Image (cartoon, rainbow, N blue to C red; front, side, top):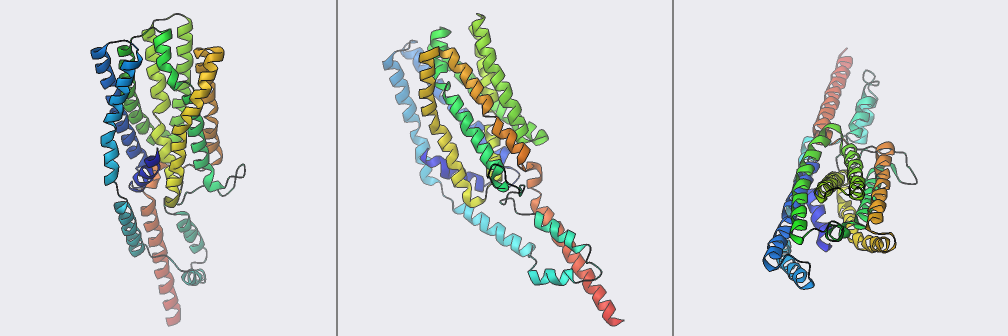
Length: 372
């Protein structure tokens, strides 16, 4: 959790604008594929040591998991941000050399030209709108005391935190549900988790591809609503006494749909905050992970009071509520189209070229008038 913030910020800084959802998705897929190692090792150990739920065997499985995490910790010693800073400086220098900015005096001279007085303000206005990708292009008006440029990241992060709290209420109790309610063996549960991780990896890639067609937040909302529907379907099929296989399929679909767009929302946040603030916003994602502990305790209280199915129902309702900030972000914020982010520099070059052309035309017209 301590390293998550800085690693995520450096990762976002190392990715060109317009490509973050693809790289964030690839990172999520890599993590999911790595997460399949845990259930695989657990499956092997349960089948080898004994396919029963005992404290001794569960403790040995947990010890093996901690040992496997040591190589990942060692890799942190080799992570540096020198490349990110060097790359940023070179890009800024290149942009300064290729796209010289127009000074205030030059703009005043341009605006005093009689022939171009009607066209130049529009050109300058368009050039000013073509800001760098690190400066979010959001609406200037505020909403609920939130500045316009903060609307999208604030609501997207709020949705992620609320969704994490809702998921934490039940995620720790699914193994118990499989054990006590569905009477499944430990090795069967590990197989379910392995298949779920692989399904999430596939879903993440498909969702990222679809997001380039319809939008990142739009596909996120669609996946969230579909995932909540699968959770309600799980509860219904269990009450109807259906086979545990049907319930497990619904669980896999539910988990894949709910977690598939995770990389997309993180890329949206990183695209809408300045570079120097990315570490701060990434820290909110780590808060999202740690909040599972508190919400899991709340889930335990609900299980003791009303049962595990009531906990699942509450989770589904809370996950529905967690989608409201995403709707607000789309309604009152200006969400960047990722397909256009990569062309920001090209647009700036075109605007600068137009201004240079108009400057030359103004200069020629002025020389011509002086000659006459």
